Length: 431
Image 1: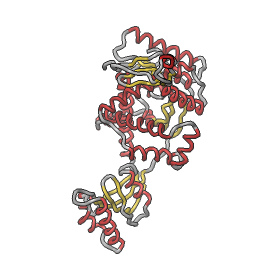
Image 2: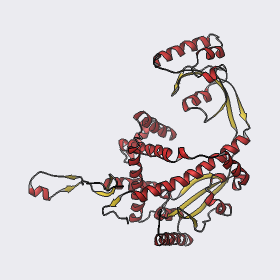
Image 3: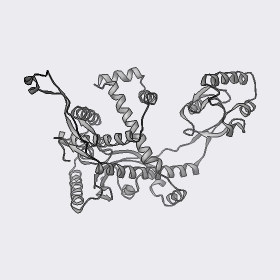
Image 4: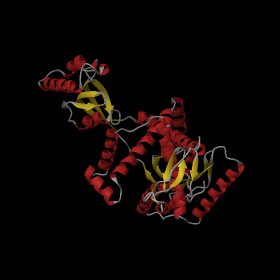
């Protein structure tokens, strides 16, 4: 990738006189050039404040400022690279989608949007900056899905082999892991490999001497969760990366592994906790619906008015199946009188599922809208379904998919970083 042709520091000129020009007041400065973008000092400072606040909340010992800055600026570099690729690929997030994401985030914290804004303000966050950060995270997520996730395929043969050979998955346990990665650059020479191994060995020595795993992870790890202390969260046994599976199977809670070598670098893992997994029963809904999709001949307003008329007919005793067959634009289900069969949670779009799971059995819903058009829905019965075999296969597929995504994302990010033009301007890290 080519070096940018120019960049300008942001300064304030008091006036145009020679004396005042000599007394330039610098408002901000560039700490790194990343391809065609820059990281400003204020941007680094803001991110440092957020990370420090998160570490204090976790009770993690604060690493030296230079160490923390190295981690934070490397994260910012990767974000800048991804955002530029997303822009070149015309990946965007529109305002309605961003509004929904922010509202959902507030709702998950049991807050109204107004309460959420007040809390952000009390912690020193500008709401507009917070929205922009969420937008950027959504854009990067869309990019990763396009570049990695959507290209990952799991074959039936892989699932069969996984089910035959699974070991940890049979004990119905969940594991919480923490992870340190000392990465090896792609195409590294022997000296770079030696330096990475020495860095990993020193990290292991610190752990063996009793230093907190989280603190060491924040200080030295190149993993995506470094600033979270390397925490990988709770995972079923069959969701643990194959690279770590054998080690985890023999570890006790609180135990740290030795060095684990892979093409991406040297890994150290810690089993921070373990618990028995929960038995999950599948709740299913026998549902039927009528769909009207607006088109060139029917505006959304006309479609909604027509659905209201259909609802009046149904409330008056009209046959649901007959009306679905003659009116619904979902022709596959219309031929079955609108019947969708047995449907579980997570199989339908959110708006449809919300109505389906809330409406009493037998009641006909008012018209509601999804991305497909306007629906009227009826749940005719519900059941608790024993889908053991389907669950096992789906878990195997998801576990294999997650393993592949984890591995490919790490490799992809490492390649992006290695290939990008990055110029640190007096930044407190080694290039």
